[in-house]
Image (cartoon, rainbow, N blue to C red):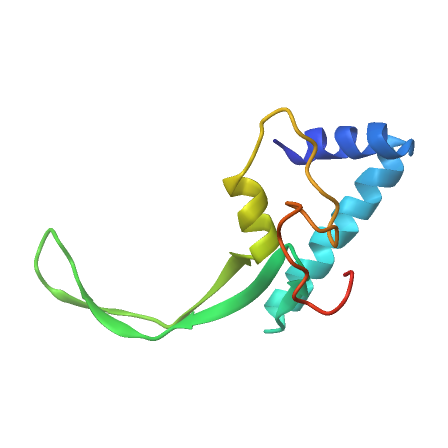
Length: 117
């Protein structure tokens, strides 16, 4: 699914215009990007966690020449899916509608967060 397809789907489900939904989606992605670039961790309960991992500098090897090559430190954005998302994907029915964030899906999954969100 592309961002455009996401916008169309959300607009159809909620009855908003595609322009309104596009602005919300883009602002959400921009906010996630800004948080990660400043080193913050972003957690969306029952969905997952976005964070930045730092890969230490190390000495690599050029496979063609065999020479040692220094590799600089890197900051890598990662996503860890939440428990509810993992369970939904595991039990996925391709024709089913996925739950909203915060809903208890699948039905047998307990809400361990202490909140609905």
